[in-house]
Length: 550
Picture 1: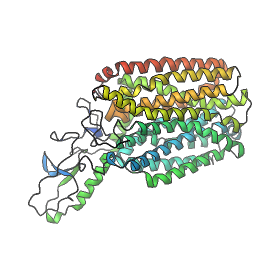
Picture 2 (picture 1 turned 90 degrees about the vertical axis):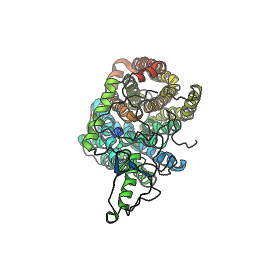
Picture 3 (picture 1 turned 45 degrees about the vertical axis):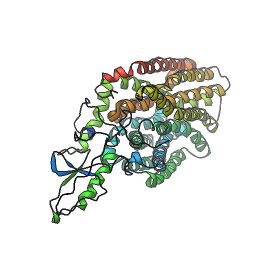
Picture 4 (picture 1 turned 30 degrees about the vertical axis):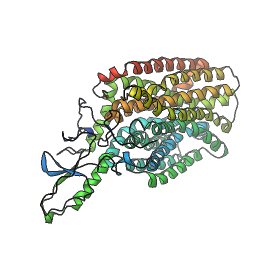
């Protein structure tokens, strides 16, 4: 993978923008919007500022290596920018080893948290026995309430990461997850377990809120596909791998060690993150640079000038209330106004709900139909994880290659719709997998048949998630965080709700008919949605107030 710096290509992002991408001129501005900062009309979005001429004054000037310029509207203000397009302090220009160290650390955070969401599934019967839980709804609630916190955590942790930095929030939230997940192992009642699980999920949602933004900070669109593919795999592979270990841990020890084991993994990732995780948020990095310049000024040798970064609007200070207003309101505004967000939210919510439905139904399928022990039935999650992993590796190689090839055929003009090429066949794998797994279990055929179905479901899901997540990032540019927050909110609500109605549905319809209904819904939403985006996506974006126009 080659390292490139921002260019005039509309698909390449600017290092000056907080998300890495310049705001379209017609985009509306909401109160406290970080992207609404004033820029000098004389400074193109892809260029850097030039240091002002040295004046005959006794004032101590900033270090020569600091790239600053006088504000054209106020000579007493110094505007801080990157030191040219190749500034090594810019995360876009970091060495690949440093970029991948950060990316893999964030992916490890994103992997451990979802493991905890599902690792408890094989131990659900032990937990139900320990706390006298007799209803399947309550038993599944102990699993899915963790995912409910995923819906609300990013709405708060996202703006916090813009105020205090991505790295600080990720480390603090991961420690918060570690503490409450550890507490789950000491819970003495069902109520305590529910509360601790929700709080652990809240902390564990931080990588979902900040992870994609970290990758966007470091890579331009034509290079970020592989990084996003690995990052997107983690929240899907984690729930598939967790129950494999959880089944054996629960069988050989107690259900409490299921929580303690994931806490150990979280502690290891926290230790790695302390050394490997670096701040990537451009506005915060430039703010630190501005603070260094302020410290260099000596009021005894001349008048002290005001210093601000290119991201800061003169006379405008952002409060947490403003950030919170934007983070809570804009995702729902986008969902209400944007057909792209509506369709993608519905489809990804559906398939995310399906994966947690599969996770919670594997234990009763192989315990009641195939009469397997807790440890053995946990091994069937390997098929789901195998489909996720293999498809992710293939798609990671194709995402950027397909994008670059289509961009060259389109006269060098990249389009977000180019991300959907691999998604189209993936929308057929999910209904096929549901039919194979459902009817295989219903007819009591060999256990390998449902496993093949689970592998197909996993493959279709990860390719769909990777393609559609990069599509949203490329289509909504500076509003990508809010767009992804909307998608994540409804996705997490579905992941919470699907396992709760699954027992009643399969009890009434059986696994064959129940999965047939789900397969019809998957095909009915996914296939038309990807075709509409591919065929009419550019026109839809042209009518949008928030999406990228070109």
